[in-house]
Image (cartoon, rainbow, N blue to C red):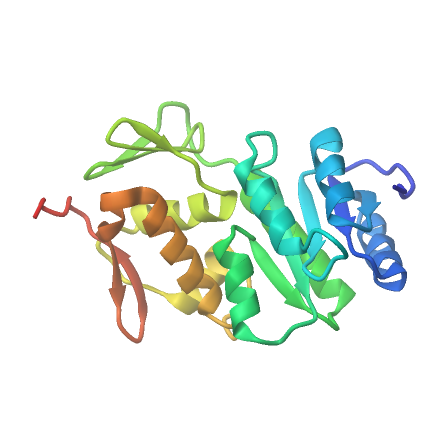
Length: 240
């Protein structure tokens, strides 16, 4: 385990077994003001995540031993690390690989080779989603059985608290604040992911799919508007 110069700022854990890739990422993130730790294996990554509690992990999916997918699954399944931001890196160009990572809870992805400047921008966008202030205390937004406490970043459905990643929470909040109105995929990419609208919209689809599953029956309030985007119904869906 190695650490870059101790700069002020949030801690980022870079996980990759290619030394040149690690050096490139560390250089640009440290230059941007982040404190950086590194790991070369999945087991080391999990150990560092528990011990150092980074704000975000840049995670390569092709790791020796424990794969990046397995690391991601364990991060999301563990109480201390379930809320950490994850930007996954993959050398695979198949959509199925990206979809799998997003379905397991990654906040965003980059394919290799990548632009270091784009990586820094995406890291910053994820961290802003996680830390941006939202509303005054006790600001509760209720849509049918869904209650969103914007002061605590907490979602409750029929009395049960729902565990959402920062990206899932922001996606639901935007749909809820604009309930009844269709939100285009490109617009959601710009507002939730702070991404250019020409980036693949499959990212939005996978997060909506995962959000619906977590909301249970209330997930049916998120409607797909074919060929355009998504809308959160302003009223509760009647029981069948």
